[in-house]
Length: 253
Image (cartoon, rainbow, N blue to C red; front, side, top):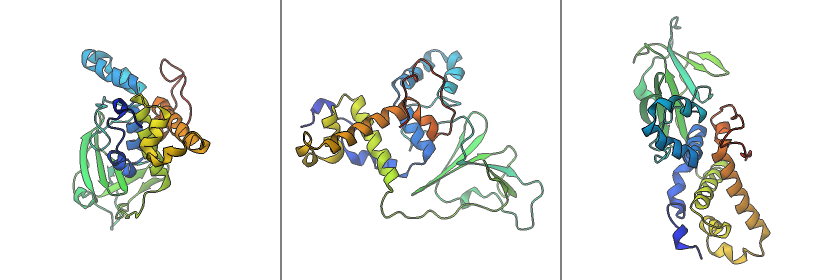
């Protein structure tokens, strides 16, 4: 039986269903925002704004983001470099059939934010996230050139309609279970309580005889802690941290 003192936000799996539709940068934020020292640094930021810039960069961010906001509401300004972000520039020498920038033709729910350096556009639809960095001077109706990191410049639009997924892929389910297990551990739940929350009370009937189930839960907990304590940087395509005050014991998931 799960200890009621440990049952909070982590126990209902339905609360984590949004995880199934996140991209890598959004997942990176979900792990980072759970880091106890990031949360402390966030609180210190309000009292020591002069130290904010260096502290945010240590976490891989340009600006502070409130850890209370999950990936549906947060807009973390990551340091540049992720190949999911497409650079959009005014096309100085467009071909006759050049694509034009039309924000309303990009499918999905759109959010325009300033990331500390310039404007960024995020478009979300079921099963698909699109991220764009907008160059200064780009206006609606202009011929646009797209620069994909590692792929060069293209003139053609790249906004296919999102594909419906009848069931979530195993990788997405792994992230859901990992984050749920991490939250349970941070809330003080035992391994058995974590297992019951993830797989149900019936599965726990064989907890003491089913070594495979115990190992699975243990791996999920370890993976979550590793991603929280530095592994999120791999998801965000950031260089690993040097050994320091809080990442020295991080392990790869």
